[in-house]
Amino acid sequence: MTLRYEIDREVRCVVRKAWTHPNDLLGHLLRTWRLRQSQRRLATHSSKAANQKGYLAHFGVHLTGDNAGDVVLYDSVQKALSPLVGLQSFRSLPLRKPVTEEMIRELNQNARGVVVGGGGLFFPMDITKSASGWQWNIDAKLLESIQIPLLIYGVGVNNFRGQESFSYQAIQHIEATCRKAAFIGLRNNGSLRKLRCLIPEVESQKLFWQPCPTTVLGYLTEIPTRRSPQKLNIAVNIAMDRADLRFGDQANSVLAAIAHACHKLQSMGHHIIVVTHAEKDELVIPYLR
Image (tube, rainbow, N blue to C red):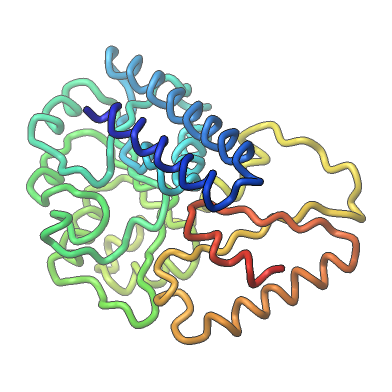
């Protein structure tokens, strides 16, 4: 059923692309193929790990068809930790599906540890949609029953300007998570400051700056050497999901300023490449022309 749904969704996506962007259909097919190859590789490693003891259970967003960046990020976390455990030692588990008692029991028996991340996981959510009040959908009692090391890796606090803050239940859960975890790596200093304000000082001593693995991909995988330092290929990505929270009523002026900077770099001989993680990101293209 899940496979059929994924295939149907891909067919609809390709048809929509053919209609809206006929000149980029080949590029879209290639990008989709690369995304699916990455997902299949993760699934293969996960399947092998699940059949042996001593694997790392990795909770994250790895089977999304909506945001290619999430897939790259999930893969990068495993690449960053693979020198310690090997790439085939990760079992992939969905972050947003409810964690069950049976799952925790199985992890306690067979896994060597739990990794949660990366991404902006500390994002306020309705308690009816996530048992934690943030993105890891695990009940507080089940969290407490984890008996193996827990690592929160390369995550961030995504509390946008003007957005409702964390609920009391979410703060209690975040505090319990920090108490349970052996290591909490935050991807930026702003997230460090925000989380330290939410939890007691004794738990905040576990917080560390842990850059998002995607920012150090050059150390985790082979990237072609730049041929001409005078003329750069500059990738620009502007996230357009939750645009009202990101830009407020200043979207036009912010995007116009970014476009001005891109045109300036282009006039200096650099090549600007617009990179979209999701279809919504394409809304920025008219501003950059």
